[in-house]
Figure 1 (cartoon, helix red, strand yellow):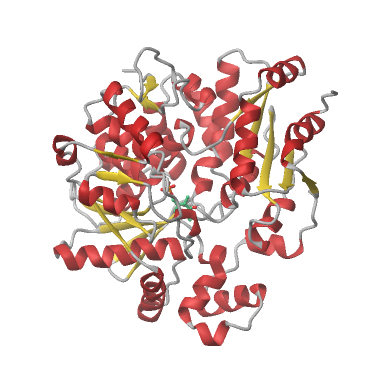
Figure 2 (cartoon, rainbow, N blue to C red; figure 1 turned 30 degrees about the vertical axis):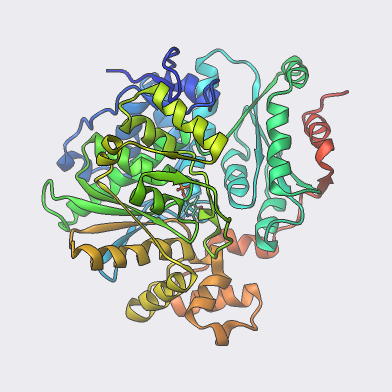
Length: 498
Ligand SMILES: *Cc1c(COP(=O)(O)O)cnc(C)c1O
């Protein structure tokens, strides 16, 4: 049965998967959701034999039902190739009572690569399928990581251009270096004299600018967005949960149908929602353990049923989880209120007007498979140190939040179910925080690259390409502009005259 997509806030319009990917967000501001979650067609015995790419096909074909076999296999082949530094794509590593599912072997050594390496291909395939002749121009505002992962995904993908705006004085030196050294004639990286919110607002204004849209269309272009609520990012993330379970089964770590728990370091709620979808497809996942840092809106939500963003925003050493509005949670809310779009729209209205909403007891009862907890800065560092001292394995700060929450869960529940922890970044991406956790005195005076060498030595792991590259790569993007000049910069890059 083919899957169609509609908004979480009104069910009038049904779209095919390719239409939903092209559009990104529904016109009413809602997120696209599948009309049902398809069940896996192959048995676990069959799935166990498959490569990552083959698993991706088996899972994604069920969600993207208007893609042909050839189209989808072509997208998968182009995404999960030598950009990843291991053939397994997403290997499992056992350390200290848990399996760490390493989702950081792609171009930017963080888990966003899992989806952003395939999204460009899904998008141009979707454009061709819907007779769109224009080239797709991706506009992104970034506070650091997503920009680089999107650049790496779209670089040199035919039929696309990508423009990334970042706050010139608001990202780390390594993050900036990663972006301004990005290769690919279709890429453009721009520092703005403003903060992230201004960059984001500037991008939104361009999306809504009718005159600009006409100018682009006349020149053979149209805008699209790569942000994390696109179902073209969600669906590829379901794959690695199926793959992880199948590999545990193949390697005799679990028996047939034996349940596992999954722990996910969470920000926007995309990754853990993908695990929830995998469970609904038939993967025997028992508990979905949602780990937060000190921005613990989700923990409070699972405790009280009240989602409340009215609080201080805390800067932590797991910055990719510093989020107060977890956009993808809307898909779960929609689901637990019985796919009632009007009810969901009310909750979201309350969120935007009052910064909070309270779900009903009936809805809360449907969250019993979720467990939420959080860890502070000290707990995160302690976890990195503990796991390193016990096993020699080095976690990044985000993974350490998950790992630390897992220890709390075990203590709370004494549940010894086999557990997979999503490992969302390489420790090399957050070298200073990681080394500081291991020995703050010893490493305090070292430079960033000295720390990289030291991390490689004490962890006995090779330095990833993504890091080696930025040591030597030349700067190829040096545009800096005022916020008001953003549209001008875009037009210039596309060769459109005023
Ligand atoms: C984005 C990100 C997360 C959070 O993932 P969500 O899907 O937004 O919940 C966690 N860790 C790292 C390293 C990330 O980049």
